[in-house]
Length: 202
Image (cartoon, rainbow, N blue to C red; front, side):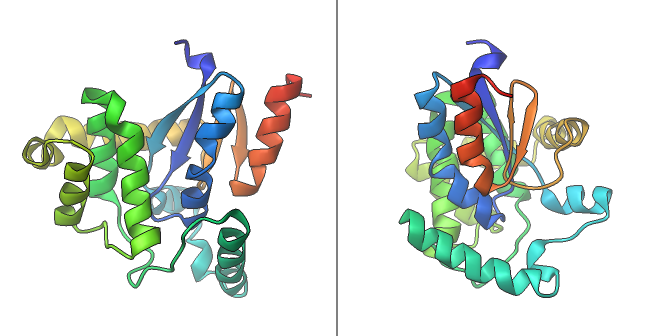
């Protein structure tokens, strides 16, 4: 399948809006004969590079976002909790996703959803490598092989490259979707992506 038949979905597992979008992006893609390429990034590094910070740390916007997230989850019927540890570092989860994407591509979708759902659905701290490995095991992934891979320099380099490529593509937040080189930022852009693909753009 050509790259043009995909939707690049840039995300950080610590992004609640990316979590909400992850529940619908695949169905949207399928409607248009597309697939989703999951591209985990580290928002902490992106924010440092762009001189920004997490939405929840911005006065007024942070309080509003917490209200809006709960409202959006109710609207869409997606299970959602504000985790006790939030936001978190997601290095292990991101590396795990990239390693699985490279070595067991058919299990990537399941891992992404399992990690997201564990964090925002069940309040499981996925900054803990042990939790990442346990969740991967439920997806049929060899946890021992994954544990070894997480410390591998090549896997570390994969994540650095993914973040660098994201910045080069203009990514500054999450979720950030790229469709045929057209950028869309935010969960609320999903209907716009739908119309864009339906009409061929404008």
